[in-house]
Length: 156
Image (tube, rainbow, N blue to C red):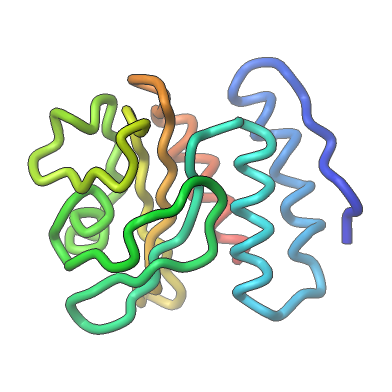
C-alpha cells in the first residue's frame, strides 16, 4: 500500500496517468469496499482539487444513498432518474454536465457546484452506484475524465 500520493502538474491526461497506478497500489490487497471507495475519493480530490468527489450507492430499487466522499456535506438520498446522479443510474450512462444550472432537474446539494460528471459503477453487469464529481468552475469535465474515471472504477 502507498503511504502518500505523488501529486503532479501537467495536462489532465498526465495527471491521470500518474494517479492511476497510485490508486491501484492503494487498493491492492484491501478487500473492504468502503475503505477502497474512500481512498479513491481522497486520491481524486487531492490530485485535482475538485469541489466534491463521492459515491452514491444503490440502497433500494428506486433510491441511491450517500456513500464515502470528500468535500462539503451532501444530499443523503437521490431518487432514480432525478438529478445528474439519478439520471446516470437510470440510464446507465456517463453524464458530463458543463453547467449544472442548465441540467433539467439538477439537485443543488451545494451552491458552489457549477459542473459535474457522474459515472455508473457496475460489477458483473449490476449497477452498484455512481461516482459523482463536482467542480466549482464551469466546463471542467470531458471525455478524458470519463475515460480515466471509468478505468479507476474498474479497479474497485
